[in-house]
Image 1 (cartoon, rainbow, N blue to C red):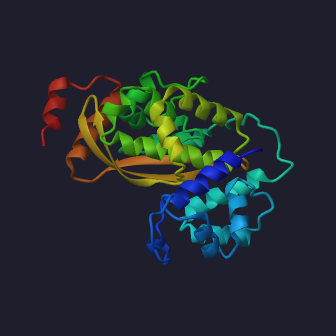
Image 2 (image 1 turned 90 degrees about the vertical axis):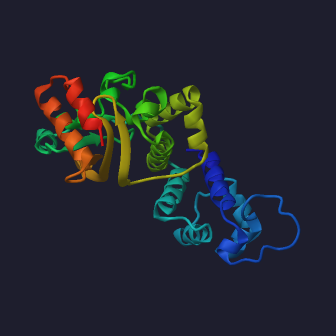
Image 3 (image 1 turned 180 degrees about the vertical axis):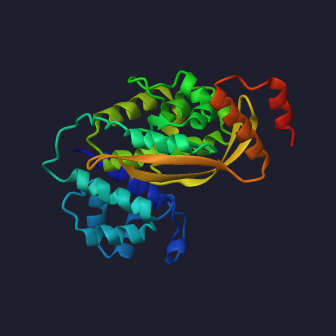
Length: 301
């Protein structure tokens, strides 16, 4: 697979974010013509010739040893996820790669759905590498109701975090920090594109988002990568109001050849968000709309 453009842009963006002072090099006199480090400075830090590094940054990565890739990763101060992405790009560039193919999704076992359903006070989802939701519990569907009922379904009819974030205008109201959510979504897709470069459906999704969404193109051009994520997210739920939830994501082996991601959102015990989450859980359990007056009272801090 010809991924030289991805290699070139990834290395160039990582180099541009560093200054000589950050890596222990003298700044030098005069005005610098490039943002961040020069190629020759990265070459010095990695212990290779300038000519060799220039060739690498042009995308000629096939056959480069792991030791040299490690040296480049250290020179560019790559974190573990970025280092993994660089190695994924190197593997994809090796010859005799299979032609692009459509990866089929394994069916989520019934036991996994039982596990999700047992989480009555956590919103829980199982998604594939393209960020399509394959399974969710009742609270998860209620919490992400705009995604499940909006125009963000994938062609196979599954809710899609990526499509919701970039193609549904309502996402900007749903996320308290839409920019952060968009950056994370693009970074997750970027990492998966490096890990599964021959996934035709993933490439089609990225192509569609790049064509339709200026915001996605901007996020994609940053070449940031994420493999796992967790922390705190804030939402403006259309029914129960502001929510501040702690979330964790982890890989789940569905079969010998398929791994999906399990994500849970949980409210801090005793918090206002927990009260609102309980209200939302009650609504989800009965599948009846929440009383508007009750919801309004719950919104009040």
